[in-house]
Image 1: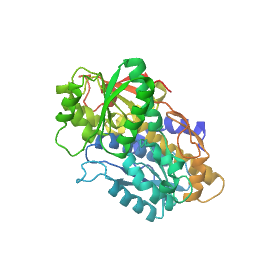
Image 2: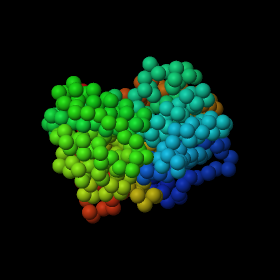
Image 3: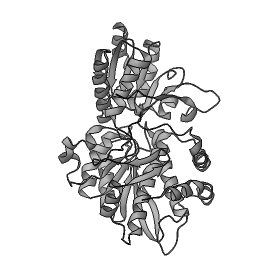
Image 4: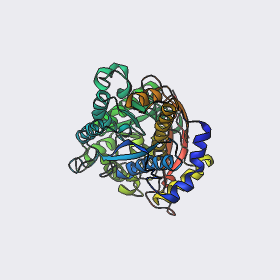
Length: 412
């Protein structure tokens, strides 16, 4: 387990790591451990995915520079699960990438994927290969629900861990926000047909009913459709007081653009699939102005305790991080802590002993202590709410300044 002291040393060492650059110091006598990274780094979700990628790469670079695991050098294997055909993440490509990780001997752990649809395709393969993966953003509850264990963990051991909470909290807590903060009496719900979007919208809808919000209707969108004006016009005719969208930016950007023209003055909200610069750059302003979005982690990029880390990230990548860059970085810290525990015990790192070390760990990270339940879910349940608010002094893809933090969503 990584100690608080060593975590602090990692953060303090950020400036040095940036100075020497990626992938960090390589020692000729070191053995190599490969960390797989699977994210949709092209397509409609690329901007958010690249921040997660950078978060993971920064963690690996710092670990090497600080010689956190003496005798070993960490190297990334970066795999893209987006395809031109899908225009976004593609579960079939994610499955192919999972097979590549499993078949590569020195891949001992992995970071990713961004999307729950990819996670559902990858997890059975990784389970059979006993390869642990830590997602910084995939939130569909099915993946860690013991009811679906035969489908997602055929190998019998938990290999899928999260540094974010699940949609079992993200959807209901946002419904609480609609009822208790926005005080809306009715809502129309859309989803993008994907595993993540459908599950999130289901969870939101169920809690709306429990909170007394009238659900006027629910439609499933085809992400490849050219426009959604028909369904949005229907929503207008029903005089819905609010709109909720479960899905990612592929369909979401079109929803943002077209809803601004048809139902501009009602509250609109979405989950972490829309907490992305892809929305503010793709839909732009004024269309995106005022949308409420959640993420499934604490909001920490504004925390003074991580200022040095934020500055290091910004300097290294000429970009600003968001909270999911941090959950990705935190995933590397969890893997690193497991490696240190294994080597400190005099063992040679393997997929199995790293998996076991992660399962039983509590690791100090940028978002606070991270530990997991027996199914792989993080034990904290914080859901953060943001309001998209244009700040013309900063670029449209600057999530820290275009997504204004509102607060923690009310928990059920």
